[in-house]
Length: 81
Image 1 (spheres, rainbow, N blue to C red):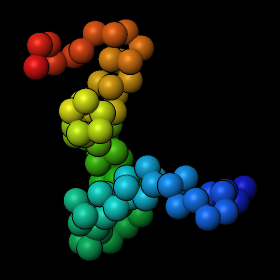
Image 2 (image 1 turned 180 degrees about the horizontal axis):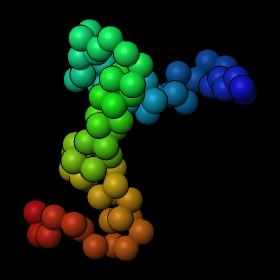
Image 3 (image 1 turned 90 degrees about the vertical axis):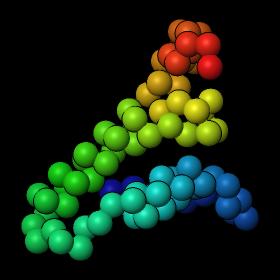
């Protein structure tokens, strides 16, 4: 286990992670889960949705995986939008 902290007086170091977990807590409901595997399945499904389907304004209106493909190939996956 390794502790990770942002630089002193720099709140922006952790902003992407805080944003991700904030969206996750807003968009999924774990209150009905009774077992760990149920929680894990819901979170795994949401992470797949987040990475492959949920578009983001700051990523040229693409999902994270679409954006990665875009910056590595130069081909915009949505055509001429």
